[in-house]
Image (cartoon, rainbow, N blue to C red; front, side, top):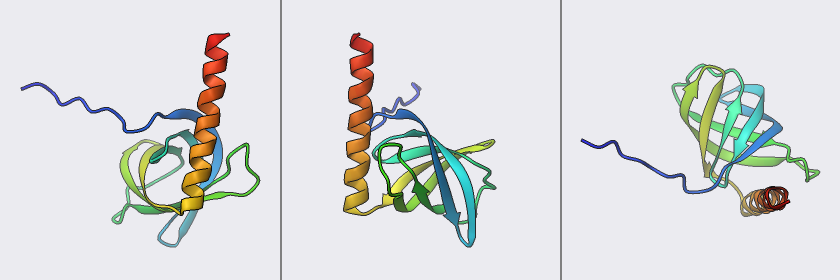
Length: 114
């Protein structure tokens, strides 16, 4: 039987953005290592939770205010990193994230063309 190959829905961009996540009553500092329109890879200590829902706050380098992801679900955990998929975020947060990722991708294409 052939293994199933899946493609990501959105492009990921490398990142090193300060963040924190709230799981239950526990707030922990973390760093976003890559980001897309529907999820992030986070570096931070995580014991795999019984309820894998988290709230994430991150700070994008080109924006003054934090960006809040109201609800995300932990999809995988490897050592000190884990991946989450966004479940709920405001329209404003979604728009700000899309603008940021588009800007990063444009900068990367300019650098690659040079």
